Length: 271
Ligand SMILES: Nc1ncnc2c1ncn2[C@@H]1O[C@H](COP(=O)(O)OP(=O)(O)OP(=O)(O)O)[C@@H](O)[C@H]1O
Ligand SMILES: [Mg+2]
Image 1 (cartoon, rainbow, N blue to C red):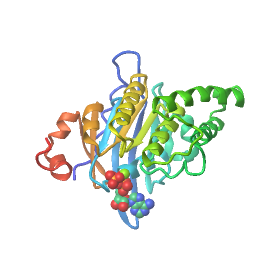
Image 2 (spheres, protein in one colour):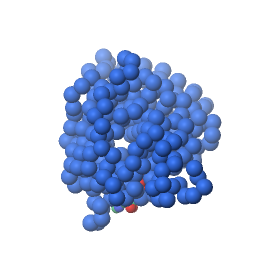
Image 3 (tube, rainbow, N blue to C red):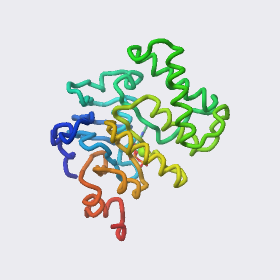
């Protein structure tokens, strides 16, 4: 297998005033029960505003994202945030609950919460927990609630939740609420793990619009998805992962037509 797509060290988008943050993964290895599932030599995420991370089941996509979030520990290696304003923050030394403070936020492939709290309360809890991590951003607890209330209403309206005092029932509702949770945390670097899996087309479109708007405003977004129409339509760049390594990266068209990608993932007739 070829080595990881190398860091190209491109300066943060020299085009125009917006600069996106990047995340650098160096020598990052993770094994489960003696089997290496992620082995990334040197990889920069966020070279382009919207990146897609694709690859077969078990390739290590979720594990890599969890390693970035520090919710899966590294066996070895370093993961750093390169903020758009310069400098470097070693994420792999931060506790997981400090990640939001640096604007690094992730949605989940499998949603496990929202069962015990109403829609409103679960979102409020998420922003309250984050607010305690961001004391410089709040003047008072009440002001935080007031500000988040407006945002929460906005996003719940946007995604068509008529009754925030209800419990989220369907897997799709939980998925969308997890995305709303991410949005409320004001990400500068957003990792989305299968954000639209199981969602109807209208909600998928809405998620895509939000991602485009976020990226246009300076948030770097990395999306793991098996919905390849979304990947080809939304992403500026696509990274192909197989057997724990990012083996290719390029514009959507070049990845879609790549022999290795077709053989290992897409299958013939997909191009
Ligand atoms: N906590 C764990 N314990 C043991 N093995 C694990 C654990 N988490 C992941 N794995 C294994 O690591 C490998 C990579 O899993 P991962 O979930 O990262 O793949 P993925 O690329 O996200 O796949 P999918 O597209 O199916 O979501 C798989 O073989 C998986 O079974
Ligand atoms: Mg996964």
